[in-house]
Image 1 (tube, rainbow over the protein chains, first blue to last red):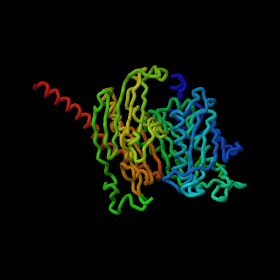
Image 2 (cartoon, rainbow over the protein chains, first blue to last red):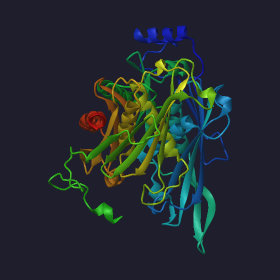
Image 3 (spheres, each protein chain N blue to C red):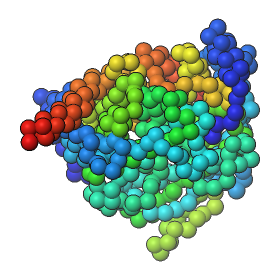
Image 4 (tube, each protein chain N blue to C red):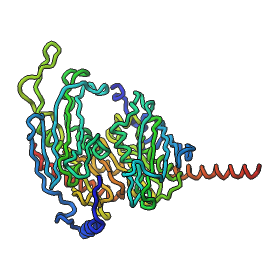
Length: 263
Length: 249
């Protein structure tokens, strides 16, 4: 997924970070401007589009019915899929999902699942037989770095915007009725990604910084400020001290980002 | 659902399988187990049984994946269909693709990839039996297999998990604890460099519990690290014995 970046530019990015600044004028712990738009896809039960600087992600939520998993007969189902759409970057190619899009989908999935954001017990129509299935589809429209945070935030915004169809059971059959109720939500997990460049921690890396950074760590923080999912990525490492530092930074930034959500 | 009524940890702090909170499962490591691979290792970590074979540095196929300035590392994590209670389809799942990626990224900091431009190193991990904590056991074995292949490394990579069951932070979760427990934090670590190369988590932990889990997992890593070095030495002790026997004949 890497595109080319000249050595001289790499050096420039590193040196600027060393002085506590960034090439786009941000400080090390500053996010780009965030804009969220909800409900722009009328045919989806829920949707949201996020602009994180120039990074653009659209998330659509479809709600269908299906069978529950055998080990959780009293819970509805949620699945997350991510598409790195070829129009989003010259480095994205059409074809089946590669490891990058699978990792992205699984990080978003884990944040929502482990924070128990969706009250899945309220999605049961007939225990063990029929439940609502919530499909969360992440559509990356423009890649300018930090797809993880943008996708996670867009996914939660889309879930906040999701309406469940009303139903009634007639002669053992599920009939969809008129009207909607909001999707039962308990938490609004926020995922914060922190990159490491020259042993300095930065939040919200943009595309060029992503190509220079040694490693990243993403943490999902729930409403209570607890950590509910972590993923380290890229081929570098963190010292134990840096992990503690990153966890504190993630707490602080999650509180700030949560305010951008329309609840 | 009956399992849930059973306590995962009793009043004396003894876990369901008889261990204390900071006690690891028995770990057995063996190096050089596959004749055809350039390097190989086998690990038994509790009931986990995992085989790792390493090939390379060798030519990369397809060729466009090779890099002019470094060696590329590819890692396939795969579970045998008979490794879990319900037969697992042999086709790679999304979980396996993700684990292959994070395991690769956990091993890469240990390698001097710039020394082998235009080549590739293939790491093949086969989980023969799984009982919780397979990604950690896989990393421990994969680092040994790479060391066994003879390419230089900055340090061995060793991995161990910690997590929370019944409000207690414990080390090295097995399957039941992983499924019913509150959180699982796998950590991969290079002890000589004090570098964490893999860190994941699912479940919910307070920041303090998270810190404690990471430090407990690192303590577990250090214990397994000693066993890793022992396994490498044992291989060469055996070679020494063989040469001695040949000379005596």
